Length: 539
Ligand code: J2J
Image 1 (cartoon, rainbow, N blue to C red):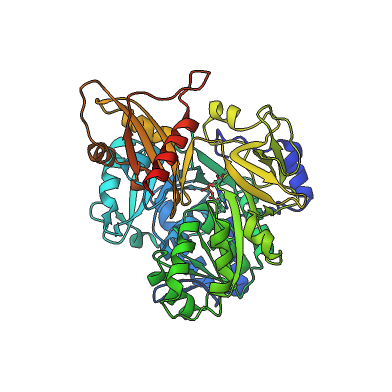
Image 2 (cartoon, helix red, strand yellow):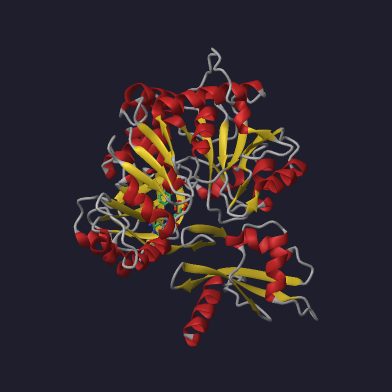
C-alpha cells in the first residue's frame, strides 16, 4: 500500500464492506470480466477506430508486459497527460493491473504543474502525446526530466524523438502474478486546490468502483448506453460520474471526442447514436446557442449532464426543450461526494437544485463557522464523509488537519443549503478558489507566482462575475515604488513560468493598497465587491 495516504478507520471499512458498498473488485478484474461478458462489443470509439472489450483487455495485457519490462512496478507513480484517445485507457488499465498509480494531469497543464506533479509524487514515468492542439508535450518532458530526478521514463504516443515510443511497449503477455488488492490506492486524482498547489487525492479500487456502480444506477447506465466524452477525460466528472469508467463498468460504449465544441461533438452524437454526455455550464450555453443553426439528429440523446460549476436556472430551463433530453445537474468533487438530480425528479428540482448525494451512505453536514449543525434551508459549510470520500490527501499531514474534521468529515469549502427532501443548492464558496466555468484556480498558487516578480509588492486574486464562464479571475496588484510594469508584461511573466493558461488572471487591477478585515487580513470580500461594482458600471 502506498504510504502517506490516510484511509478510513477500521470500523468504517468493515461497515462499507458489510453493507456491500465495497465488493472487493479491482480495475484489472473489472476489465477482464467485461472482456468475458462483452468481448465482441465495442468499448471505445475514437475517430474511425473501434476497440472491443476483448481487444482492449488484450492490448492492456500486452502493455503490462512492456511496462514490467522497462521496470515499472507496484506503487510507482506515473504522471499521465493525454488527450481523449484510446491510449489513455490502455495505459491506465495496464498501470491498474500492475498496481502502479496514474497521476492525472490535464492537457492544459504546463511545466509549472507538470514539474510539481513529477517532483511531489516522485514519479518514475510520464506519459504524453507528441503534440496536441498545437502544443509539443515533448518540451514539457525535457523540463520535467531536468527538474524531477525520480523520472526515469518518458513514454510518448506518436513521434517519440529521444523518448520511448508507447507502440514499442505492446509485448507478448507474460504469466506473472500481480498482487493488487481492492483496498490499494488505484490512482492519484488532482484537487482543485485552494491553498497553494494542487493536492493529490488517493482513490482506492474499492471506493472508486463503488462510486461508478452507484453513479450507473442513478444515471440509468447499461450495456446499451453510449457516453460521449467531450470534456478532457482526466477530469473527475467525465472520468467517473458515471463518465467513461462508469460506462465501461456497465458494458456500454464510450465515444471519445477530441474536444467539446459543437463542430466536434454534434456530428458524433448523430453518427454514434450517443445516449448521454457531460458538460460544464459554459459549454451547455455554447451548445444551446449552436443547436438552432446546426441540424444534427439528437434523437438518441437521453441525458445531458451539467456540472463542475453552478448552472444558472435560466440556462437550465432551456436544455430540455432545445435538446429534447433530460437535464441532470451534477455537483461533485474529485475528493469523493457526488450529488445528482434524479432522472425522474420534477422540473423545478432539476432546474433549481444541484441534486442530492448519490449514496445512502453519504453523510452530509451543513454547519456554521463553529462547526455547529444548522437547520434546513439555511446556508452553511458543507462537510461530508462516506464510502467513496477520501479521509486525507496524499502526503499532506498539516493540510489534512485543517481540511478534515477530527471525525473524518471532509470540509468541501462549498456553501450550500439543503431542502427538506435532502437536495442541495450550491450558494457560494468559502475556499480561496476561482471556478472558471469548471476549471478550478487556487488563488494562492497564482499569487505566489506573481510575488516572485521583482516589481510586485503584494497581490490578491479574487473571482469576478462573468456572463459566459460564471467567474473569471482578477488580480489586484500593488507594485513596488516607481515600478510601471503593465498587465500584459505580468501575464507573459506567468506564461514564461510555465503556468497553465487558464490560471493566468483574466484581469489585473493596479492599486495602492488593499482593504483589510478587522483581524488585519486582506479582505477578499471587499475586493470581490469592488471589481463586481466596477464591472457593473462599465456594462
Ligand atoms: C456548483 N459548484 C460545483 C455544481 C462542482 C462530478 C461533477 C463535478 C466534479 C468537479 C466532479 C458543481 N455547482 N454543479 O469531480 O465527479 C464545484 C464545487 C466543488 C468543486 C469540485 C464530479 N460541481 N462544483 O467539479 O474536484 O466547488 O470536481 O467542491 O473539479 O467544484 O471540483 P472538482
